[in-house]
Length: 478
Ligand SMILES: *Cc1c(COP(=O)(O)O)cnc(C)c1O
Image 1 (cartoon, rainbow, N blue to C red):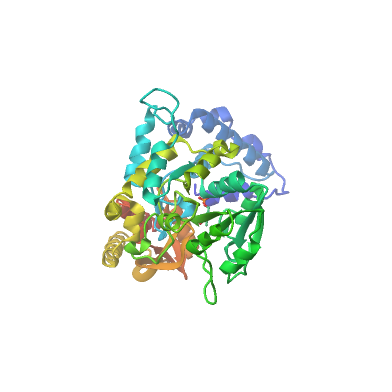
Image 2: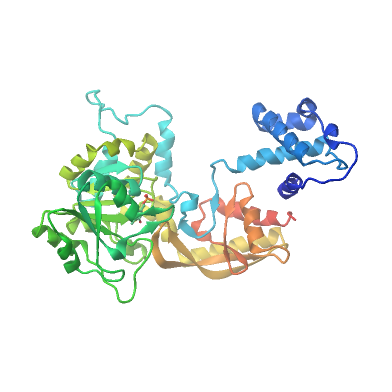
C-alpha cells in the first residue's frame, strides 16, 4: 500500500452511519502474526517491533472505524503494518546522495569525510590509545596528535579540541573573560543556523558584551574608545555566512593587535569556517585563514572542524599556550570534550593538509570545490543520456547553473556548474523532489523555478548511477 493511502485511512473521520460493528471483523493480533505476511515481516524487522506495530495499527483502525464501514482484510492490515514499519525506518541515520549542489550541506551532515578519516574511524573497532601514553603506560593527553597537527598547520603555539565552534567560543569567553568586558563590533553580531547567536554565547559565558561601531562601519578608534580596565578581550567575528557590502568597513586582526600596546587585552578571532589555506588556490575568493590570523597577532583563534577543513564536527581553538592551559583548567572543558571517533577522524583529515597540492585527489570537499567545468558538463550530459534511455516519463535537459559552498561559508559565492533539470507534466517539482528523497538510498535534489535540479558537483563516485536509477524509478510511481 502506498504511504499516502495509508495516511488517508488513518486520518478518516469518525462517521455516524449505522450497521454491524466493523471492529469485530478486524483480524486478531495472533492471526496476523501467524499469517504469511506476518512471517515475511519477521524476516525484515525485529519480532518485538512487528508485534508492537500490529497492535498500534489495529488500535488506530479500531478508533477510525464506524458502524457501516468495512473492516480491511488481514492482508491490507499487514500492508499497513509494513508501511508503518518502513516509515519509522526512514528516520534512521543512513547514507543519502547529495545532488543538491550545496557542498557543505548542514542538513546532510556538512562535510563528506575523506576516506582517510572514515578508515581511521573504522579501525577503532578495537580499543585505542585515546588517553594513554604508550611509552610509560600512564594517563596520556587526549587528542594529542590532532592538537599537534593543528599547531603545526596554523603556526600557533598550542591547540585544543572541543565539540563544536559554538562551544569553543563559549569556553574561551567563560575561561578568560568571565565578569569582565568583551568588545565586539555591531557589524559582527552573528546568528548561525540552529539558533546560535553570538549575543547568547557571550551572555552565557558570564562576560559582558560591549558593542562598538555601527552595522556597516566600525573603526579602530571605536574599539580604542571602549577600552578600559574592565576590558578582557576584543572579539572579532568572521562574517562567514553573510557580507556587509557597499559603504562598509571593519578592522583587521593586525590593526586590532595594535590595541595590545595600549592595554593588556586579548585579541580573539572567531573565524567560523576555519580555512587552513588560502582558498584562492582553489579558485575561491579570499577568506581569512587561521595561520593569517595567528601571524597577524590574534591571541586565540577558534573555528569549526566540519566546514572548510571538511572533517568531523568539532570546535578548534589555537593560539597562545599559556591561554590554552588556562582554558583547559576550566570546568566547561570536560563538558565539551570530543570522543575518540572525532579525534581519529580529525587527525586523519588534518594530515591531508600537510600536502595541500594533493587535497583535490584525497579530500571530497576539495575535489568538489575544484571540479572542472568541462567535466561537470560531460557528467551531466552522460547522466541525461542514461536517464533518457531508461525512461520517457520525465523530461530532462542539461542547463547552466550554480553550486554553493554552503555550511555558512562563502555567502554570495556561486560556483558555475552544469545541472540536470527534470520536469514532469503530471507532478510538481516538490512532488518529484519528495519521490527522490523516498528512493533507497534517498537522493537530495533542489528546486529551481518549476524544475528539479540535480548537480553533479556534489556527487561521490558511484552516486551517478544511483541518481539515474532514482530518476528512472520516478516513472513507475503515480
Ligand atoms: C559556523 C560558525 C559558528 C558555529 O560553529 P559550529 O561548529 O557550527 O558550532 C560560530 N561562529 C561563526 C563565525 C561560524 O561561522
